[in-house]
Image 1 (cartoon, rainbow, N blue to C red):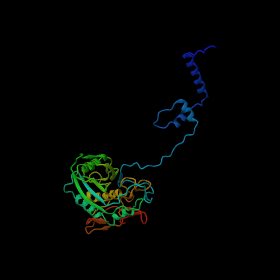
Image 2: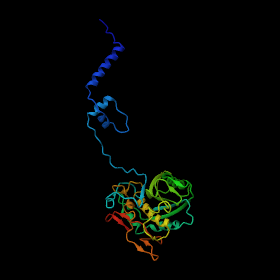
Image 3: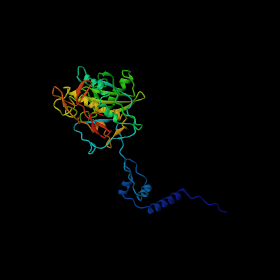
Image 4: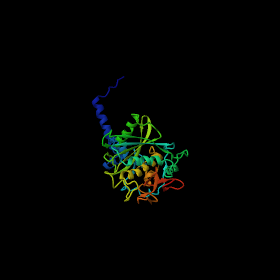
Length: 335
């Protein structure tokens, strides 16, 4: 019996090459357009054989659902226009945690606030906010268990921070101001708190204060606790035309105090009803404050002739209306 000889390596290579040539001849040609259609942007090109096989299959394009990717929620400037229809679109609940326990507000005065009227004005506003008819607009919002957003908002203290992070703050810098306040023990780590960072006129928030927004709110894990915080700045020099109500005579008579009072309640309303950015908002992600931004409801004159619409903390103020969801949805000054 003869033992068969193994083919030489050269013969194997020649045979394999011929087989590949036959296989390539049987595959359909793949045009450049077909290759473009099946190669997702940002991925490496597929092998030639796989590319030819995919070209004959239908391309399925998935329509991406809009996602809530915000890391903060802003108060629009006077020049911002909301999406058409958002003024009447209903707000809906998206399952997140709401602030239903009594809320504690801490004011972090960043920069130079010496002898500024805004300090006593905004402090009195927070002192008088809780339990007011205006605060009860937020209590029309409930979570999945039927618990109402709190209208019990309490002033819990303040802190002066003299430029610990300089005259320019990024969004991360604002968060760092809050982190420094609680990790140094100057303010408590409080999961039921709202930490308010207020910057003086010479401090620039670099992500768009005055051009994109007048204030914003967010949250972060600090000291292993989910903390809610918000930013608002003195618009006197940076945003007098975009973050101040377009009225000739305002009740406080100080541009910073009058403007920041309305921004403060806007962001406070939204923090209570959408603290982690997964609570209440409409289909365009507008929160309750956004839907009523720059609208003031019934106005009246003070004895000095200034325009006002509410009295909080013993002071006449002009603040925006707030959206309510019960008994019907719309802007209101009382819940």
